[in-house]
Length: 159
Image 1: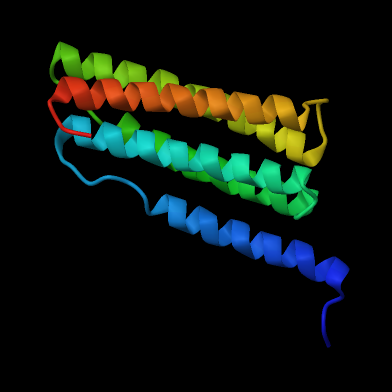
Image 2: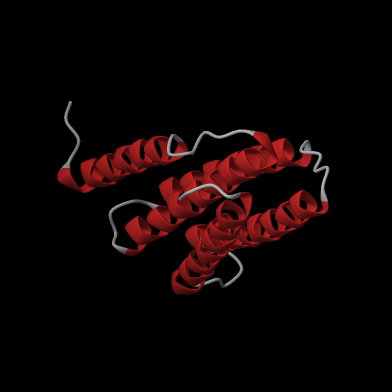
């Protein structure tokens, strides 16, 4: 039995979304200490934001269903929650490390809020528009980038 072109298209898009999510999850730098752990956490949070942004773009373009997009965003939220739990175990010992942690936490909190709005937009709940949710995700991604660049620069690592 073969899928009709109408049902095969969303299935292919969902498969592509899943593949991209897996690839993005693997794009996390590997370095040590508090700065390295925070950098990996920020990269993971950005991966979650990018996954949700892709899901909304695919939904807007009609290449996936609301259910698939919502599932992708839910998965990104789950991954972000796991990362937040991991980062909560970091115990900064210096004032600088505490400042890095505070900035990372603030940037990740912006992703959390944006992901929740993206989930609402994907499901059609709460009157959140796709464009608004996408803009929030892009802003959160920029906040993550700023926090990462600051961390890398101050920690003395090269980008």
